[in-house]
Image (cartoon, rainbow, N blue to C red; front, side, top):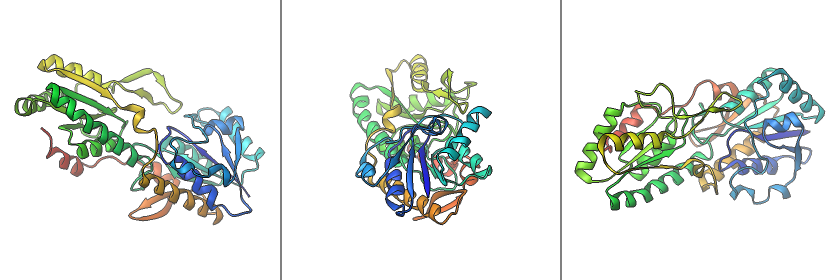
Length: 340
């Protein structure tokens, strides 16, 4: 039996733990082909055979040993046909796609065409539905909280406002939990827009009482007055997403202009998704990988592994991409207690 595995979309801590879990739990009659550079590798037929020796110790390493890309093979018929042709040419009996909403969407489409596919949810934003957590998220929150912790001291020393931008296109999970853990004085996330006037009010109240402020905001946050999110509209990926970034700088300039307080911006960006995964993410990635291989062995295809409570289960791949898992108001209301 030949099983292909690939990692698509943005990298994140824990990907290598998944790869290791898949390879280590495969039975002796299964050959593992690691497809390079995500879906692009199935377009160009780039791969490497993976053995136990190849994955020894990789669970502690960030990124992905297979490489990744944001290629969308369903963006045109030519790419789709190449993927289908190469699945047959490589004689793949099953394919495990490890990725977020975009990667899982491609996996679901291939499954609907009759291919034997298993999905493993991966997103730094933790917004895949029907799983409690995705690996990499825990690491990102820890890194974000540590950075915000450090910015408190410099903001306090200089009687300054620091606006910290974290990842989160549609969902503000990282910003909310990192900000809450590190005591950010205002947390701004895509799910709950706020006007510039409301933000400035928070700033005035905080600065008059305490003399410094740290604001955590997600890259996808959009003040009510803005028509679009802040980003580079000239850079659009294969799935139609613009490259986000710059909301912290924009907001810092607005705050400085309206309040005259010394205001600086910091963009954490890819720092959140790089480096060594936490123990939680290593274990979750490992469990996801092992369960994905168990599904392959059982020939239970068209499924996505998921965390439910403390258990690893599986659901139809379509369930993972049905909706975005967004921060509920009840949780944001908890954070609001500590604003100011």
